[in-house]
Amino acid sequence: MKILTIGGTNFIGPWVVRHLVTMGHDVTLFHRGNTKADLPENVHHIFGERSQLQDYKSEFERLSPDVVVDMICYTESEARMLINVFKGITRRVVAISSMDVYRAYGIMLGKESGIQEVPLTEDSTLRTSLYPFKDLPKRPLNAPPDYEKIVVEKVVMSDSELPGTIIRLPMVYGANDPLNRLSPYLKRMDDSRDAIVFLDMIAKWRGSYGYVENIGYAIALAVNEKAAGRIYHVAEPETLSEVERVNKIGELAGWKGKVVSFPKQKFPEDWDLPLNSEQDWFIDSTRIREELGYKEIVPIEEALKRTIEWERNHLSIEMQKFSAPFLLDYATEDIILKG
Image (spheres, rainbow, N blue to C red):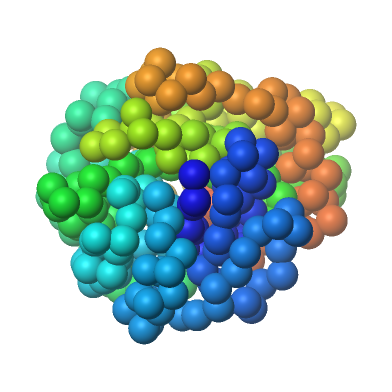
């Protein structure tokens, strides 16, 4: 099939493209050309801005792709533009979404009450509080203030003339991760810290993760006609607690320390956890495994080893407030540990 990807040169995108090519598809990327990615030589390119998608409609008509995979559709206006441009040109669109659409995420942010049952399925209740990043002084990955995957999904899945497919992603790690999800832990491990301190509720918290190469493979599978009109989760099948996950990272990183947890009373009085850790945030990925035959092509332990190696050469704690906002500074950790 002829596949057009919108975006595809950052983090997850190159893996999607590589897998599509390996599957025998003819792939064209629409992107700005600002990011150089290691892609197969037979991939075609159309250079342009996502915000000006309609200006390239004649080129898209000449290309006549069978499926359009939109990696960077974040807002309602972008979703409407996607549908308006490609209706009558392509047979289907695949839009990348997130597990942040669920009520559980709103509960974690303190914007919704109660606790949502987990694991989340594709039919679990969505958030009623929209635009989760709107009021944040600094939004993750510079997301626009009107970022909202719930409305993106609604637009993509509501046009009978252009069938859609939605892929809801977990927290994704691996080489080129813009959030450097492992860095806050690896920095402590490589600094030979004897312990990493967690709040006891954080230690028990469970969330869904996925390795970038495996995620790219799952998205590539979604161009299959069987996926029309369907919503799919992608995530690793085993959901570790946060303490189990960090201990596994430490084991693979050769760290001799340990993760320890304490009740809130042991933490400074002015310290406030930014998330409601009573709400777990993990998903069931049975549907994509049964319907599209998805399974991880890189084992989890190997995925973590590769990520550790990359992050050690690209250590950054600048994104800690997004990837590990509950970690403390070393001096405060030492006070707690000395008790």
